[in-house]
Length: 375
Image: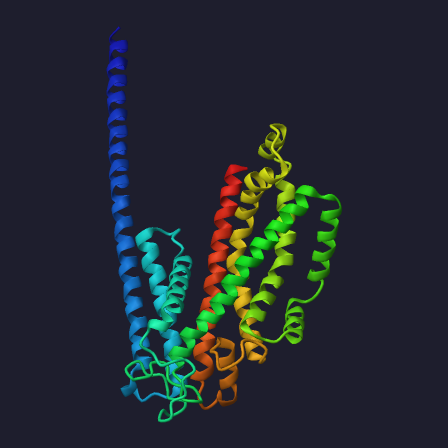
């Protein structure tokens, strides 16, 4: 009996000790859990300030590149400017991810900001206090270097015209051709593809043969043939670009509509007595639009490149209308002496194309995510 009592006392003491150990471990875990968010906040704060410091360094390099008193050669200025832009982007990305979270897509937001900025400039271009893009001044020297603090921020071209004014007004041509032609081509191609998928039969066969025939030609060769046959004006290019977009959109929309036609909501609409036009407008077109519209950004980028390529070859919008490709073509013979004549429109063209591509990829990724969740 005394032995049993001793064992009981020992067991009770052990239980209390184990409980105390567990409580201690729980307290330590709670302290660690409390300290972890604090460490995370400190880390994010350090990353944010580091990103802002890199942004400041990038801006300092950009300021040095455009500072007239620096007395740097042209190649050194451009090299410093590119290094400043890279540092600015990396610092902005680091600071944004530290503030908004690691999943924040800095490139997508920058693409949206640049696209909105270039579209705004294109809209308000006639109201800006700039020299006319086709104005030929008699007293302005040609090939003035870019100077942020001078009368000509981006310099002048070989005819003494303001490069900034020509770049901004050239964006109007590129955006109207790119966005307008893409919109018309996507709408027409989507409509024809849905008609072919819904009605099938002879109509589907004819549309498929015509579409395959047009897609068999290389796109640039087809554009060159259309521009060579027709007079290269703005209206001609607009119609040619719209026609260029239609076949690929017909192919994509037809396949998408055929897949959607076998889904339950379309079959239920048919069972309830819905007719062809209602099924196409209410059931097929919205689903096709969700799949095809994200590709519009990539199509706009392709059309902007096509417009610049034709202008570079002398088959685009005729001069003196400003175009980015035409500006590059005019300055290619003096690339060694005046590199800014080629670099400035090339950089604007590059950033715009990358921005539209990035927006299209972002929209497509968002659409694919929604479809995977709903599926």
